[in-house]
Image 1 (tube, chains in turn red, green):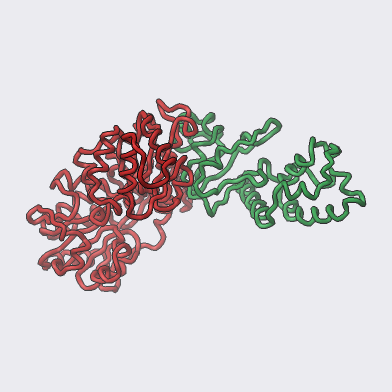
Image 2 (spheres, rainbow over the protein chains, first blue to last red; image 1 turned 60 degrees about the horizontal axis):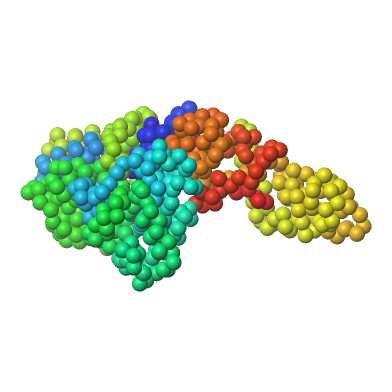
Amino acid sequence: MICLGCSCLCDDLEFKNEENKITVGNACLKGFKRIDAFNKNRLISSINKKEASIDDAINKTIEILKNSKKSAIFGLENSVLEAQNESIKLGEKTGSIIDNFSSVYGGYLINRFLDGSVNTCTLDDVRDNCDVSIYWGCDPMSTHPRLMSKFSYYPRGKNRQRGWEEDRYTIAIDARKSLTANITKKFIKVSPGRDFELFKAFKDVLSGKLPKIGDKKLLMNVGTSIKKAKYGVVFVGDGLDYSMGYMNDFIDLINDIGFKLQPVMDCIGFNKLLFERFRYINSIDLEDKSYAKDNSIFNLLKGDDIDSILIVESDIASYLPHKIAKKLKDINSIYIGPHSNLTAYLSRINIPSSISGVESGGNAYRMDLKEETAEKVIDSEFLSQYEILSRIGEGL
Amino acid sequence: MRDETFIRNTYDISYVAKNNKLSPMEIYKLLPQTNCKECGEETCMAFAFKLLNKGTTLDKCTPLYEEEYKEERKELEKILKPIMEADVTETGLVIHEDLCFGCGNCVVACPVNVAEDPKGCAIGKGASSDKVILKVENGKVKAQNIERCRRFGEHKILCNACITPCPTKAIEFPGG
């Protein structure tokens, strides 16, 4: 089976279900807990905190969306492509604003990644050829546990037969000694927000000058190995995005030295769908298909433009500041998702759905845009997100 | 069934060893340090290593039972008691299940896994053969077929291929 726990989409899981006791071979703890949670902490369908049937909840949702002046759709990072397509159709019907998690972080990088101006490669290429990999501002050991063991560092590839000890060189750059930095060969510590200075120092080293800041010996050492690299890959995460924001110079340098760039982020599939249709990845007003920064979830909840919001499997309330997250209580908020969480608690209507990739099938994109098909492995009484969204669409 | 008991027992031993801060050096300090070879080992240090890995027992060291080393013997019996009470393990491989999160680095790095499963573990996929030593199950790494480990048997070597790639130090061999 295929695991949709993170954007690694591991395809070698061994699933066994014997007398309601589940064993999953080869999956990491993150993936296993996602599958194992099919009978824990499930969402109960409710309207205004009172239990109600799913049909009533869906009808009430249709009523709210019909009467609302301006509505918004948020989330779908953890859903399958079918449900994401359906949500775009629904948004076009109601003329709502559509947004996702990339407006909170990583949006600029994913945009550059999708429009083709970044030198990139597939993860299978990384396994076969990569000899120098840099993890800048990301911690795949925590966020994508099997990335290093399956693709980037430990496996033997077609042209890297001697494995990680001799053939591969890794560098971690982070604000603290993360789990990834524990196992990489070199670790460069950078103060929060100082990534641009370190980047300038790297630029000096690569052009043959002495760096002005940082540990000069270490930087020269790392610079030499970057120059020697035959196939280098830079894995970039949220940390760099937080500190650098618009990283044009960074991407230009990476293209110049012939390295590949791979964002270690989730929600790339939905962003690709939106990019193909509207040339923007988030904060889109589907009424006139325009992009505005005011349409991001943060600004929407700060202002008073919307009177209803439909959130699909995204616990956004636990990421936002308290004052802004509380706004979900004041507007008509509808939450669709498999499990109960803070966002579901703040929402007025809760509609339970099946877990995508476990209780319902569908397609999804890996972080390097390879499409995979997940299958249903456990039977359940819950409707899939695709069915719920299409029923709401029909009702409108 | 055997694997489960194996892991539980090894976990107990490491816990005991960690709590008592036991190391081969601590044991060596209390031994006669004469390298008399009466226990069958080459040196007293080798005997200390074997004691910690439970490869031998304290009564093999006959000079220790003479009047001269009475106090050392009592001290040794005291510090070795918790370890001797736990069950014997074959290689001393310990997996701390509370620290492991199933990333599979050790599965891919282990040289025996790679030799046994060249189309699976060697290229980063999950274990597809039954002969492998380490395998991830339910998000935790499990040890099996421990007799294939390079640390097992007569011609053992101090391989540490599964310890170095672990980001949380969930795998260890107490006593080196």
